Image (tube, rainbow, N blue to C red):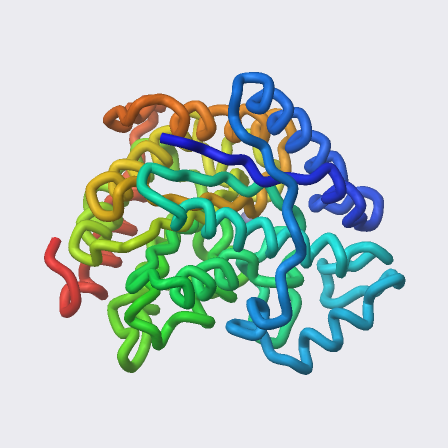
Length: 342
Ligand SMILES: [Zn+2]
């Protein structure tokens, strides 16, 4: 297994107002993690900016023009999405890093890439910035994979928020499966179990809405009962992960209770899918994660999982009794029963 970490210290230059959760210290944590893995022999590559052609596969041309006009300025795009004078340039590098991660993963068997990026991307819609996101990094990456010859792409999003942008961009496309675990009800409001895609894409959107307070065992339940069976039947040619760490028990934004070990376990499960379906091809792209200690520990844990030889997932035990996972799995399985075997 080869792994490349795609990262640049320049992500620090995407500034936000003081006290904003998407703060520059997140980039400093990513710097430290990238440096640590580089010293252990992992290739660390700088990103190059995404091209207009790559962005136009999912974004509206007029929207690209409006975002480009924020270059050199500080602009408030929505109630919690801001630009600094450098945000446009840095956001182009973030989405470029996601594209490079896909190129690395698609370049041969047993290749994995982890893109450490900010700003995040999964809330960005075709023509709208939202929830700290300017461009939908993972959606552009998935469209790039399709254009590069991947017949089927699975996106698994374990950020604590639902990836409304990613879902909407592919909800009528049977070639891109979108799977999300998220706190629900919560920002951005989408992601009910009944949202299963539409038209030819019906069944290719899989939502696992979890009640606030979910623990490691709840996530293990939804993986075993829904996510792994659907992925095994879908048989992706590439697995892309929207790797957010804001479901961590230390995170200040949300109310989930995942341990660091759960992120390693989810990554091991998804690596197993990639090994069985597509010769280990996997690209992970960061999303949220606002407690700096949890972010560093979780990034280290997933890099550890990706660099070692494949191992069965070892789920930690919280010891807390919770039926949140069972409830989410049952709701999703009911909604998806016409499309998949459980
Ligand atoms: Zn998030």
